[in-house]
Image (cartoon, rainbow, N blue to C red; front, side, top):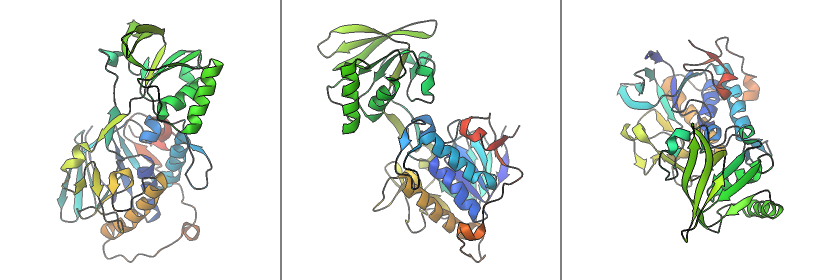
Length: 360
């Protein structure tokens, strides 16, 4: 149901950087509404690689993407953010110092500042060129792994030659009945250490390699995958028994409606002033992968710092004329849990569920 709401800051994107912006804004006393096109918080961390370890988060020698998202949600929980999941921000208008963000469901969020943390924009999978493959998606055909336990004891065919394909072949080989990795080249684009592990598993018989082969067809009965046909570059074909196909051909992303926000762009990124993270539009900021400036380092930790910078600059837009008094978090003390908790206006889901009361 469409609605009109008011807040201090509207955040577009609930990936790790958008979630960190909730805390950065809340720490400065600003309320947030968060818009996310996906049906869950976490962005690519949740949708593409929740179980993959991340090694460059300060203080965590290793942390899975899912655990990182859960911790960021918990950190922002005391500031009672409101999540609008499964919706896109489609239009931005201004009336003086007030910004209005129109959502794809007809709702409108009015705010004094907007922080765009949209990553690479809306994204979807590069699908394999197999007719009618869509009918198996989410059951037998997958473009990312949310729960590795689903594949335990199953016959798995993985297609692709990059890090995702190789890493998941290695991980699933420990639990699946069989794993076959199909790639159209005889060389893989992955870390050398991963290639060594892959070769060791091949020699032990835990992984079968089919190179250079491509996906050619599939066989399915009553919506359940039974076999995948692969084609050698010389034209030879063979069938592989399979319960699941994991196709890792990359993702397609674009800014979508954000392109119409009348802000300066560089390709699929938004140009910002690195001192404030403000775009060419006053009180509209961009952080994380979607933001571009000279010397940019595309790391999660960089996005965290950008969110803090944007929140500080947004403070002056939200509270014009109010003096800013810097405080370390140790001086301010631990945030107290807001009695309203945080809310989402869709069905309860994964990471959001751990932090949100569900608005009905």
